Figure (cartoon, rainbow, N blue to C red):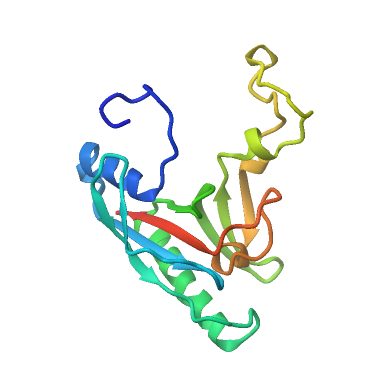
Length: 186
């Protein structure tokens, strides 16, 4: 997929994106890969191999087992993850790529207000194809226009911080897996 873009589609993960940037956009700056546990049952791997065979090392951010979501240790872990993401966004102004080995998202912002609490701005490229209401077996019809599956407003949402930090709650009907693979660029 690196030598012949468009020749075939395949699932890619943050280490594959990092490899692409390393090869074709060397001025991007640092490429930091982190594997973060968000709840019990996460298997964190420190090394993953890209589609072209290059190994990439992930920093590990394990979560202590058995944390109560309302407990002090869980809040400390969430604060550490929030500090990592918000610090990156403030310093670089570049979104954070996250992937739970099923779906990928971009974290494009953070807000903490009294009314709605802490939230992340999450861009969800899967929305139109996967989550928008449609009839079973419905196939995309280009003649019907770009909003065939419905409006794309759900692709760009503010979601409660718990969805990122603790894998609690849902975004477009989806509860994320017990870990995130993350790529921070810059």
